[in-house]
Image (tube, rainbow, N blue to C red):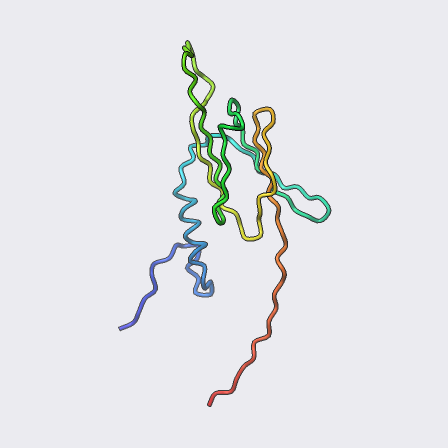
Amino acid sequence: MTRSSPPRGPFLSNPLLLGFDEVERLLDQISKSTNEGYPPYNIERLQEDNVVFIRIILAVAGFSQEDLEIIVDENHLIVKGKQKEEAGRDFLHRGIAGRQFLRNFVLADGIEVDKAHLENGLLSINLKKTQPDRKIRKIKISRAN
């Protein structure tokens, strides 16, 4: 009787890719994510003094700083928005989206949130990419007894 490994997705089914179960789980989570496209966002790459920055810009018109929350949970960047309903407002037409949202971005290793600011209805989140120290090790081969 042979033991078979659990079924794997088509991306990581190569037997030479060992220990990528976490990556496969993240890919599966991303593919199941339903963000409905709201709020729209841009992602830019910037470089200053040999340091690479990534900037996520979300269009959050109508949201104040108090209506927004940014959370980093391990390698997830979570942006939440929820406006407070103002009592006494009677809309004849409501065309400006003010619904709550949750945007989830998966951060690669070495990516850290640097800062965030809100200006003119745009929430900018700067991510800094740090270069990890390169580890090279020589493995000693022992003789069989």
